[in-house]
Structures are given as C-alpha cells and as structure tokens.
Length: 396
Image 1: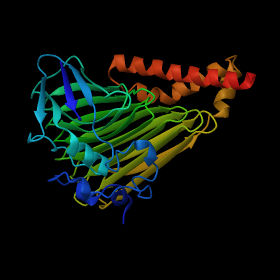
Image 2: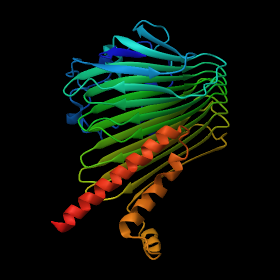
Image 3: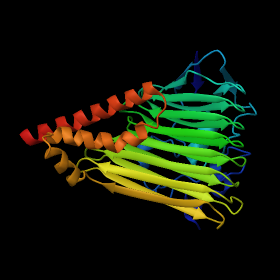
Image 4: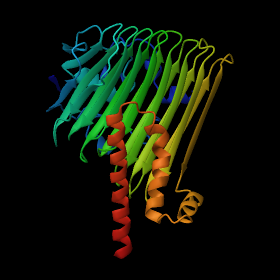
C-alpha cells in the first residue's frame, strides 16, 4: 500500500522543556518555542546553518514524502487528517522543529495492529524523501493494541529535507519491536522526534540505526503511562566525512515498577565526521522500584572525527531498584590489534574484526534477520571506504 504525506535548573530540565515532559500536549504553537541561536542546551551541538531553515520557519514545504506500507491483512493502514483525535497521544513536540513539523503536515499515516494479534511477519514502513532540493513535513503513528505482538521496520531513504513526528503507542500487555533505519542519500537532512508511549506491562524494543544523510537528528522520548512497562532503546550509527549524526534520548520514569535500558554504539571516520549522543533519564518522585541504565560507546577510526557524548541522570526518589550510566569514546585498542596481528592476521583484517566485535552486541539484538544482514553489509562497505581512503593517502 502506498500513501503520501503532503508536506507531511536540572540536566534533564535543561534539555527537555517542562511543558513537554510527560504532560498531554494541548496545542502545537510553533511560537511557543524560541528560534534557536545555537547556545541553547538542546541545540548547542547542532550546526543550525545546515538545517536549511527547519529551525526558523524559512523552510517552506514544497514537496511530499511517500509512505509505503508492506503488511499482512490483519494490519490496518489509514491516511487521516490533522483533526484525528488519536494523533498526539504519545507525546508533545519538545523543540521548535518538531512543533513546526506538527503544525505543517496535512495528512498523517496511522498503522494499527489490532488487539490480541500476533504478527509472524515484520511490517515494513518505508518513507522516501521529497527529492533533492525539496522540503516536506510529516507525521506517522504506529499503534500496537492490547496484548498484541509485532515487529515494525521504519526505513528512511531518498533525498531532500524532512522533519517529522513519529508516535509509537504500545497498549497494555503488548510487545513491539521497532527498527528505525536512517539510510538517506548524502544530501538529505532529517530531523525527527520519536514519541514512545507504553501502557501497563507493555514491552518495547526500539532500535535506531543511522547510516546516511548530510545531517540527521533523531530524538526518541519514552514515557510510561502505567506501571510495569519495559523499554529497551538501542542505537547503531556510522558517521562518514562531513556527516553530522545526532541522537538525543529522554526516558521519563513517572510511574513505579518500570524498567529502561539504553545502549548506543557508534563509529566515526573521515574529516568532519561528527556524532552527538545525549542520554537523559528522569526518575520522578512517584517512580518507586525503577530500574534503569544507559550506555554510550564511540569508536573513532580516523583523524578529524569527533564524538560528543553526554549522559544525564536525575533521581527524585531513593526507592529505586538501580540506576546508572556510562560513556566512553576512544580509538582502536592497540592491544587488540597487536593480539590479532601476532596470530598472523593482517592489519586491515584485524581492524575489521575489531569493528565487527564493537557492533556485534547491538547487531545480535536486532530480531529482524533481513535488517541485521543489511546493516552488516553496510558496515563492511563503510570499512572498505576508509581502507581505500587510507591506501590512497599513503600512496599520494
């Protein structure tokens, strides 16, 4: 099925405006957010000039994205107008770009897995950009109703400039596995807020994979509507020369007996490659018996690449099961390379093995074999590119 979106004080508080931290959004006023100047905490890492006007209102929608949904007959696919009462239930825009995207789309795509349904086959939702030089805004909502079990692959491809809001609504006792792939063409700019809402005893595995694009900024926010929710947020990214890849996460523990686990890993290569990872976890006073942990690791493969990593943890109650965070950025482990080379493995092959091992933990958590194989091939292609560049430099 094919449809088109027509134009479609504390660390945590510094990153997430108070009006959007768990409260139901009642309006989408772009002017409620100031135009960012680059000094704000939630914009200080983003090269605003490369946003092509998404942040200041000068990006006029002159194109549209295409949304293709490949799903079994049990899955319901709808194109709805702005007035649909289901839209916005998963969360509110937390910055001006997200608010602009919400105020600018005319039609939204809603994909629903009915209650008590177990899907044997993953649902593929492919979003194709508006095209080179074009700008579009969009909205997508993916719903898994009570006691259902489903896997969804959200695949972003093509060219252009695109800003959107994506909602994942997981009902009571439901289980959802999501893989969001940003495999854009080299010219693309994509700014996306992803809103994750978990009902009572709901389970969500949310994986973000960013490979392509000129600038990609993905901001997932997880909220627990009732007790017993369990969210695992995983990420894999590989930034090349000149690419800016930014992932900003917020986990809002506002109810008791919920669990969250965050693990993102990224590799960078080439001059000007830049990755940003911001991980914010808030455990509110009412969220007793919370268990949470967040981890970010970055592997810098060449000179001229930069990784920024900022974990934040705010705890308002001492009655928790556990909480922690960790972050590290570094180059190849010389001891690992030496160990492999001492056993007759060539240096270039040794480097490949180290990178494969670095990403292995994330890849093995991706439950969709087709996606996992595609990512393994993409990582191999990235490594071949850096080896070719190094060979050309050494022979110059």
